[in-house]
Structure formats: C-alpha cells, structure tokens
Length: 232
Image 1 (cartoon, one colour):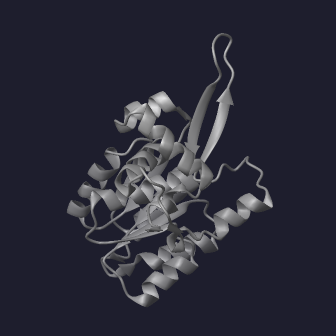
Image 2 (tube, rainbow, N blue to C red; image 1 turned 180 degrees about the vertical axis):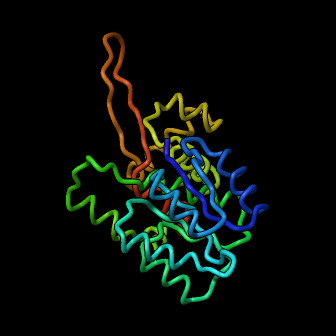
C-alpha cells in the first residue's frame, strides 16, 4: 500500500481529493494538513511515500516547503496540485523533482492517471538497474513517439487494454486480462502481440505441475507514455 499525505488549505478541495484517492486501489491517505507548518511536522513524524501538495496555502507558498523537503533530504515523492500555471511555478516544481503537476480544476481521470503512472514508475529501493533500464527511466520519449496501428487494432481498444495493464500493475494471464477488459481472447492476442513488439509489455512463462505453461503479461515502465503518444 502506498502511503499518501496531503497539504491543502481548502477543506472542500481536500474532501474531493480524498474521494478521488479512495477510488484508486493501492493508495491510502494517512494524513491531511491545512498549513505548511502542520504539514511539515506530520511529514517528519509519519513519513509517507507520496505528498499531494498545494502551492497557494493561505499566505504561504507550498514551493517553499518543497524546497525545504529537498534541502533536508526528506525521502518522499511530491505531486503538485495547484491553480498556478505560470512558467516560474511550473519550472520550480520541475527543478525540485515533482513527479507530476495537476492544474486545478482537473478531472478524476487525470488524477487517476497521475497516481497510476506514479505507482508504475515507483522504484523499488532494493532493485538494481541496468544502464538500459536507467536510460528508459530518465530519457522517456513516449510523448513524441508516433505509432502506426496494425490492421484490426483500434486506438480506443488499445487504450482500454493498456489501462487495464497499468492499473493492475501486476502479472496477468490472457484470460484474466480478457475478462478484466471485456474483450475476446482472439482480439486480445492481436493487441498483446502489438504491445510486445513495441516493448510496452513484459512477458513471463509460468510452468505448472500439470498442463501447458501459462503466459503472463505486465506493463513496462514506458507503458503510460503510450497513452500520450501520436497515432497514424
């Protein structure tokens, strides 16, 4: 379970964010604060994995807290949630390592996308990375990539299958995925072949005591970028 904290001074907005978060599996809101002072105190005591941070908090600025978090080496990730869309604020957030930036007002779909992408890209601290894996993490070009969809594959269904894989964030058999996405096995096979060719999924062969081996599938780190790519 990913532990989430929130610092937001507007109680109505805070309530909506809580409702959004409760709809997404794998995340738990462990505290919310309405001032930077209280938020920093709780961050140090409770140590969440992810902070949802507003920028304008009364007369204070959430970016000051972001800078302090980085200066003190507090180990957590930050998503900025704010009405601020000026270049200076966006650039400051980027420079101080926020993992996403949500401009108010935003839809549940965009909120869900931010959290699912965070979950998929979250690093296991015990994991060892190859250069290729590090390059893929730091030099993502999915937003600029243009995919040519093979005959018989539609963008809408491809997105539906990919979202199922991303949201699950675990190994699935073709049967499990077909049921989850409400798609036939025959159609699903075409999409899985396409995703595998584009290196958007990993495959794993599970040998059983009896019967044929099971093929399982899981989204790669690059998979969320597929949802932002161009298509011809």
